[in-house]
Length: 146
Image (tube, one colour):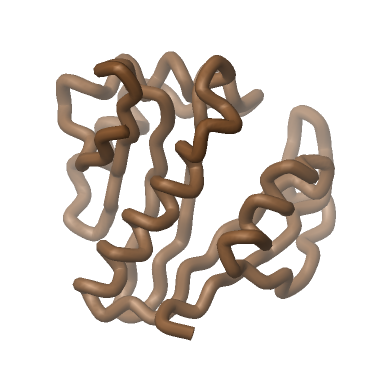
């Protein structure tokens, strides 16, 4: 598996996975705008030269917020998400970021379990955070270096 920063040439592939994974998929323009920001990290994982997953995260002084993480349906259960999280953690370590945060649909038990295995803890619930369908968000965080 090859993990590297997403480049402009990868945006259409990111968008394809985005559309297949999220009911509120970001547009190509939205993905491009994230790529253009200095405080954003976009990492992709490739299996057999095919984009299999990505993470989009925003960095602040000492926090990182995962805005999107997705794995193509044909590539799940192959360690893609864990590899992306590990590489994001490495980027954060280099930039002296102390904590990674995310929110996840409460019904997405597989993702909640995955994040827990990585070391994320549940911090709370945000009621009715998601739409299409309306659903609570589980707030989670990971302290780097702990």
